[in-house]
Image 1 (spheres, rainbow, N blue to C red):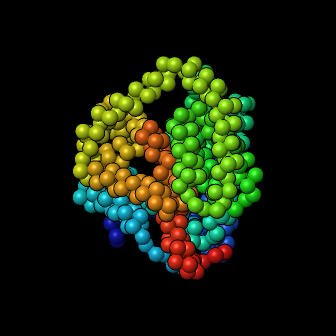
Image 2: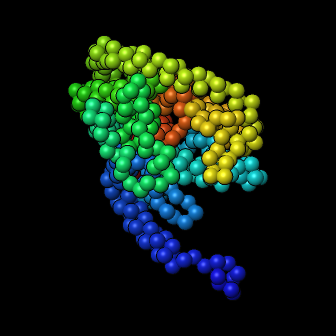
Image 3: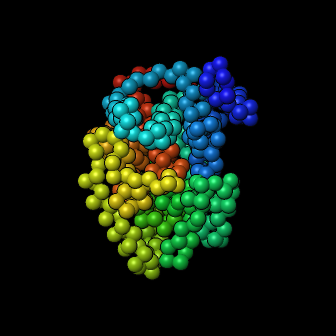
Length: 426
C-alpha cells in the first residue's frame, strides 16, 4: 500500500507484464503502419486458427488474442491517416455503440457488457472499416478466401479422422472448459476447428465463401475454394450455416453487378447443383438420424421467444440472474441461441431496433444494386443470428465484415462519380 496516495500499489510482476505488453504492442502498431498487408493477414490467421480461450491477462481485462490483435491493427491502420468519409451505415453503427454502452453511465449496464461493446464490437468493426481503405479489396477478399479455404480443408480432415487437434491446445481455463468440448450430432463428432463451436465455424465459412466471389483470384480457384468451404460447412452439421451460405451466394450473384461476381454465375450455379446432389443424401441422413435431438434443439430455440417480454427499453434486462460462479441465466435458460434476443436482453430494445435498421439498410442496398459482397455476406447471416449468438471468433469476424461493408460503401460512392479513391494503398 502506498500510504502517501492511499491506494494499493500494483505488484512488480503485474507492472512488468503491462510494460512488456506495451512495448510489444507499440512494435506491432509500427509494423501495421508500415506493412498493412502482413498485419491484416496476421489478424485473419488469428481469427482462423487461434482458439478463443487463448487470452491476454492484462489486469482486470482478459481480451482474446483475436480482439487484442484487432485493437493493434486499428491503431496501426489509423496511424496511416486514411481519409474516412462517414455514411449512413457508419452513423447507425455509432448510434448502436452509444445505445449499447451509454446506459452504463446510469447503472443500467454491467462493466462486462460495456467492455464487450468496445473490446469486441468496436475493434473488429473499425479494423474492417480501415482495412479496406488500406489495401486493395480484391486482394483482401483473396486473403480471406485462401485462409478460410485452409480452414475448410482442415475441418473436413477433422471430421473424417475424428482428431480435434485445436481442442486440446492452450491453457485449460474457464473459456477452454466452455468451448473445447466437441459437439456431436447423430453420433458423429462435428467439425469445430479453432472456433470452439460447430455453428460458429460454419457461419464464418459461409461469410468467407460469399467474400470469395469478388476475390482477385482466377475463376477456377474461386470456384474451387467456395466448393471447399461448402464441404467445410457440411461437416459442421449446421443447418443455419448452410442456409446462410446459400442465401449469401444467391444474393450476391443475383443482386451484384461486380465483374468478378458476374463471371461466376454459370459456374457457381452448376457447382451448387452438384453440391446439393452429392451432399444432400449425407446431410439429410444425419438430420434424419438425429431425430429427437434436432427437434429438441429447434423447440428450445422456439421457447426462447417468451423472453421477449423481459427486454427493457434501454440497458440490461432485470430478468437476467447471475449465480455465485458468475453464470448468467434468464427465465431458466442459460444458453440464449438468438443474437437478436441477446442484444435485447443485454442492451435493450433501442439496440435491437438499430441492428434491425442496419440489416434492413443492407438489404435495400442489395436490392437497389448498391451493395457489395460484404453486404451480401452480412445480410445472409440474419437466419443464422436467429438461431445462434455471436460467440468466439465468429463474433469478431461478423463485426469485421460489418466494417468491410461500410468501407465498401465509401469506395462505391467514389466509383459511381468516377473519382480517384482517396485511400492509402500499401
